[in-house]
Length: 251
Image 1 (tube, rainbow, N blue to C red):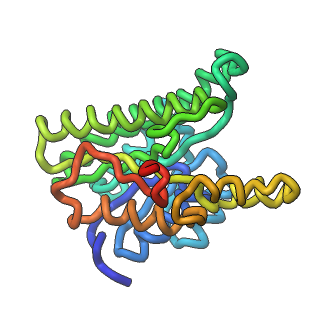
Image 2: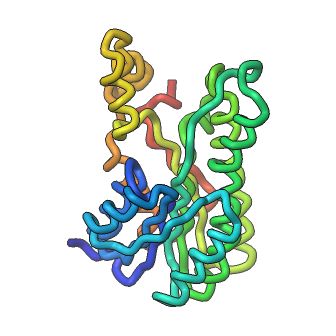
């Protein structure tokens, strides 16, 4: 175990599986005290047991849940240094086929949750003496597609919100940073199941064709980026986006 995150306390939303679980695993390996949160209580408990970490049942769209989660961390540990706003959903189609209910749900989970996470975590992070907020956006927040209008919009908004939070933190304290990470197609269990469910559609091949280095990202690629932004190695980096896309945005 390294000590890049020694004595740091982290909260990772959507931490029961996928990217959240991989980030939790990597941060624990680097010495952090990690709380994972998720709305799926069963999987959350299983992952917390597997990783030997603390867990909090959290509906990221619920303001009261956020307040209670931060209170629990404050009461249990007394500090918070790393917040990873990772919870999110896909859904919706092009602008004409997406109904208002879908649009609002995607923004509620992907964007409103980030706003509340930043809002309610900042006082404790400020009292803790230093902090790094990491908001998981997407390449879809940089490069749009025609058939995911709500997702594109929500992830682009996360990018700009992160900059606003960074500037607020720089003005109110120089100890807390805020950045966004923008992953390309990543081989999570969800993506792999989509690939495996329809081999005749050659989904992986079609995704890989869009990436210059000709392979999907692996969860560890995103986790490594998060560890860097969480660590003191990135102490002068704030208000920016870390693009993990295998060169897609360079084309």
